[in-house]
Image 1: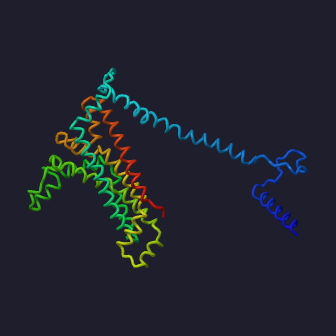
Image 2 (image 1 turned 90 degrees about the horizontal axis):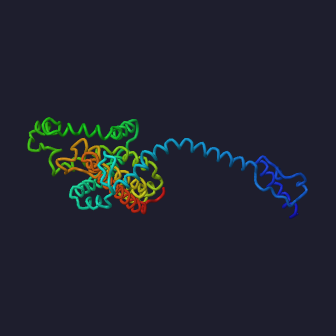
Image 3 (image 1 turned 180 degrees about the horizontal axis):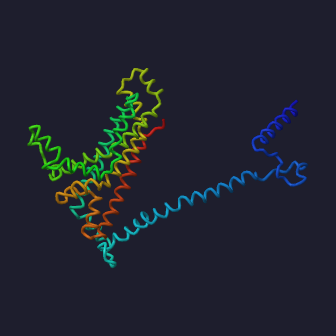
Length: 345
């Protein structure tokens, strides 16, 4: 009885293999192998053909990627490596000749008050915009998550629309709105009987950086809000309902259920906002050109100004390397810290 059961089991296994592969257990074997019980096939022809097709497809995919990869190498990677070389020279950006000066550019950067002012402004705009944008975007996303019906799409579109407009255009609009003489903001304040509140918003050295921070936060919030909204809709409702059954109110549900589940979105949004803040250029260029004086310069604008405006390409390249290191270190550190609190839904 046992031998018959074993034979029946072997027959079922062989039959299943034939149905799945379409080949018999001895297909592809040499002639006469059917009587040789010790013969075991050394690989499937189908697997070999599949491997060959995969290799061919891989070369095809590489062919599609190659043009973009070549352009990226020529326009980004090679100039970046060349910038590292130029940071040790006194090149003016025009003449074909230059001399190597060692680390003199880096020493001058570290002792430059103008550079450290740019660092301070970059920290204010980078960290400030990252925190403010994420706080406001999360609040807006929580409100949009409660909207149902036909108004849902309208409000989401209204929130996202500002991010479709380039920073250059938005900064130009704000430049006219904040003009001291005929800007809409000061005109409204004067008409409202508050002329003492009218300010030279872009010319006052005590507030100009904070004005740029406000405009930056207004520009970059749309994408962040949508990321939070998408993550909110992926929070398991079973956990929310369980918390409510246990007696948790809305604030407790957000703190103990929703907020931990948003950890991944917080990491992504904070990283993107910090990188955007470190490299702010368009707003400063349009609104103040770094003024009054050098008060509102950021690191990115400082690099542009000294490299192209003052014809000190070697010094500007050294500043660009410093900015690159700041972005890399801050981004890696922030990601390492924020990913510790991430959990999977």
